[in-house]
Image (tube, rainbow, N blue to C red; front, top):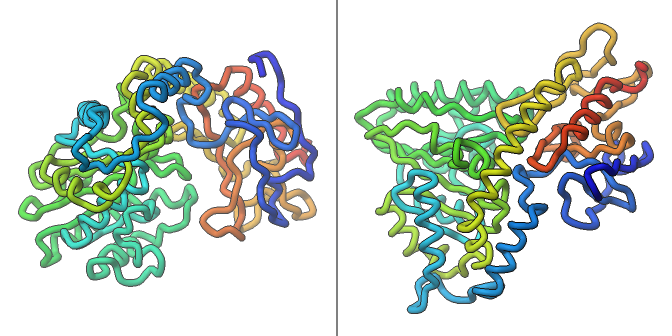
Amino acid sequence: MSAGEHPQGAGPGGAGAHGARREAAGPADAPGRFIHLDGRTYLFFSGYSYLGMSHVPAFTELLKEGIDRYGVVFPSSRVSNTPLPLYRHLEHYLSQLTGSEATVSFASGYLACQAVGHLLADAGEVLVAPGTHPATGLGRSAHAAGGTGASGGAGASGAHAAGDGHAADPAAAPAYDAWCAWVLRHTRSSAARAFVLVMDSVAPLEGSVHNFMFLQDLPRDKRFIVVIDDSHGIGWMGEHGEGISGALMRLPHVEYVLVYSLSKALHVQGGAVGCTQRMAERLRRSPFYTAATAMAPCFAHALLQAGPLYEVQRTLLARNVAALTRMAEGTGLVPTRTPVFLWGNPPSEGQAPRSADGVPRDADGAPQGLGAYLKSEGILISSFAYPDPEGPPVERVVVSALHQEEDMKMLAGRLLFFPPSLH
């Protein structure tokens, strides 16, 4: 579809309405600026492809070039006697990007997280921030049951003291701040001498970038390993796409471990861990490394060659975020510090009433879901129940580098008429 074409709206009874649930229909091809579903075309304001690299032809050519040179996969142990130098080049590049002493690459972000989780499970008292992605497995029992943590329960009690911030909604952001304050109190009074703090850099459902200034106030006579999942920051955040690493202070008693998927902004199927040289050596002895195949070499090749392309897309993304921030005024859309825009500000006089669950209602109390309304207008946003699949949908607008000004004007214009029962 060309830039001048307009999306075709679906009927109001289409998938995405809040109510009876059925399996969502899949797209006919890779979503970009548009998505094709059930024979219709919609503007697409969802997903995690922040830079839109799947629709950058030059990036696709780099992937093809990588396949021609290295093949589709490199089916060999990471510790074989014929290692592919490409992966060390990739790790060196990622170390420079994030300012890490060393980097270890994996076939996926999940595998990278698991390797870190198993390595650090007994490295100290584990304290897990509320809402943290569970991929490392650290403090998993605390998240699952709200009971004892992986290392004596401190992680669970900390999250609970912070307001039980497991719910993935805008109200969860204060829970993180309260957890940080609790960590400072707890680590000062605890008899433990070593701690593992686990948190995300970005909360994608909230659109918030976490603040790490509290780390400078941690007790200097104790040792801290700070594990940060930067999957939703690496690639788009920072001057050069370095992610959260550019905002971290270097502290003598704090050791950072950055773990991240490369598939979000960078559009590469793989993962990595940025850490000290000592930890990298331990990771390379781990079965998560030695017994696993590396990421597809075509992805590593494309990432190493795509620096100028990423830079162009980051500029476009920043432009689009700024543009929608201006247009969002008065629409009910709430800007954040990320490409994610939230919906759910308190209704002003004349707006539709909301129930206790935060869902807009018409005069008869029937749900007026934003996602279903926008879908009927030819716009598809992120709208699904999480973390409770039976709860109300979490509704967000996600901007990418692919959007045009006319797309955001259309979105803002449609929002002015929501809920439609008032107009």
